Length: 497
Image (cartoon, rainbow, N blue to C red; front, side, top):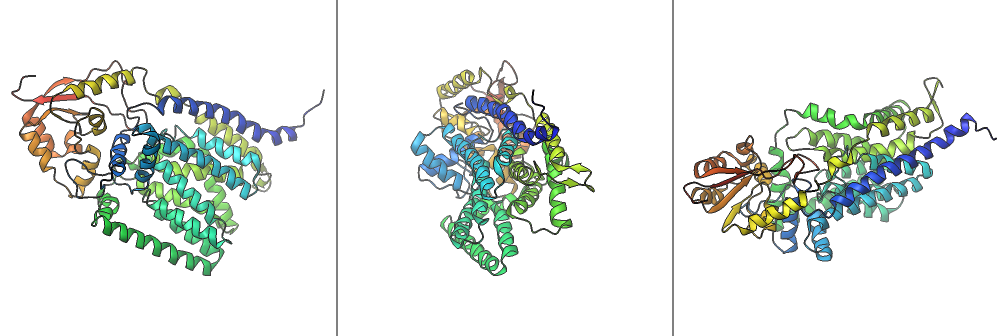
């Protein structure tokens, strides 16, 4: 019998651990995704609004326009909507077509980990570990990897741009990286942060090239924004910059940030300490992924402190944390603290602890067995109602029922803050009882979300006739993000119902 040495066990442990946990978390992710992808209703409260925005682009209508009762766009730039229009053309006008964008982006992000590993000659174990960590963070990232929202597409575009920027000796790849990073800005506003760190990285590598790159990047970006803003009669900047700056700081932002980072705190702390040791103590020049990690911390803190932010805002941070931990720390055969502690051994222990912390019950993140059946009956009920309906929290459901859609509660909340829109048409319809029914999700925050005037007209002209009955708290409820579902149905006062 061959005796396996302790050294051989340590050498083989990293890859074995990565493979085992990748099988575990990969299986859980595939299980969740397979039961969520083709679910015909919302798994996140904003999915329906993203669908309505994409549908307008697909039909050739404007999205950045004067806010109106029929439509107010969300605060995001247009690339996801453009991409969604292409997916609509291929797969039809289904909400799962938009989820497929996020799923494809997730797949490309996994592929990019492998490409970065190959480029930097980090080996199979490093890439396997990074992929395992990112897949395992699915629940800690709000189960956002397959949600029809902009975040995964944004990160995929940003990482692709940074990947090409890392080839600083090739002007062609620098130009390609520049173009892709500008595209990331037109996907989500925080792309501007990643353009900035790309400029810094090239400047640190070659000052002349860095100056040229910075001037070129921001000139193209400024011209693109100017032209698109001119094309939309100035509304583009109102929607994506001017109005969002009015969104207030959340009173719970400290506890929100703390609870967000706790699930991946072991590897996050390890990465922070490693960057501090390399950059600030050893005076090593940071590479593009170090800078991406640092700017993702800033981006996370900048967004997460604001009302309405959620777990999706730290997805870039978790991605770059996984990359740096796996490529620069894990499986590194060196010592710290006067050669008392082996980094390889410590990192294996940290990975083991981290993977155990991230374990979760997937059943909490898939639609309830009765949800689809309930949803179809609910939509049929709305379809059978004569006249118009007002469903500000779920205009997507009004669309599915063949009804005219009115303002989104989420978008209206955001633009009401900036005083860009007064819902006069909706208020007049409520006052004259033109809506056959009004369906909302909550009573406690009705005035906060819909505004004092809309809430007042609902209370004055409609009465609460019924509360939607559900068999349990999971039925027809959101599984990714804040829980919300139709609850209260109002009918016009003094009418036969």
